[in-house]
Length: 107
Image: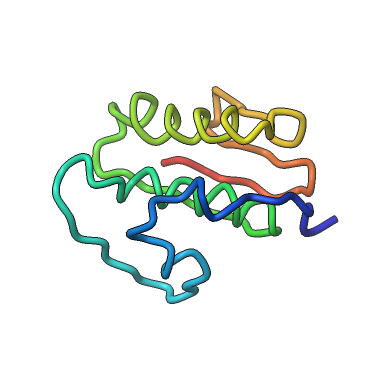
């Protein structure tokens, strides 16, 4: 199926990171203090890329905190953007499955 055409306005993203929305480098390092919005921006971009037709693996050093951080923020973005009809969360596998066949896997 591939890309799902939805309109995500730039205004939902932290303006400090707008230059990185389309960046496709395989390794990216974001610097900033706590509560700078780095992680939330990356999760927003991850959801947007899922809708474009990309499989994504999100890795966190400490798995115990995965549900309270990564999963919670991705679910929040999906709800904020009204994407619930398009993306299903599989709790046991800790993955988000889009109707386009692509997934966000959290490990």
